[in-house]
Image (tube, rainbow, N blue to C red; front, side):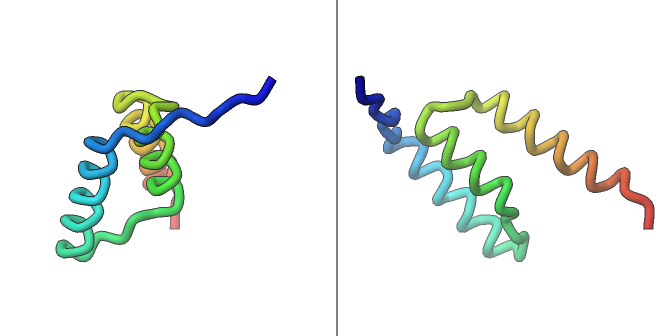
Length: 67
């Protein structure tokens, strides 16, 4: 049995490209983790809420690091 990856959603691809463009204009770098999560969301592997929760958790852990 061969499992095919989920197909990408054209509307989600457009949304990610727009978000990437806005972040670039604003000078906000996109982390590798955010790129990975965006790709998973485009393919329908995770929900928008799951993506948001993962990003918030990652950034919360980063902000908890003491310098």
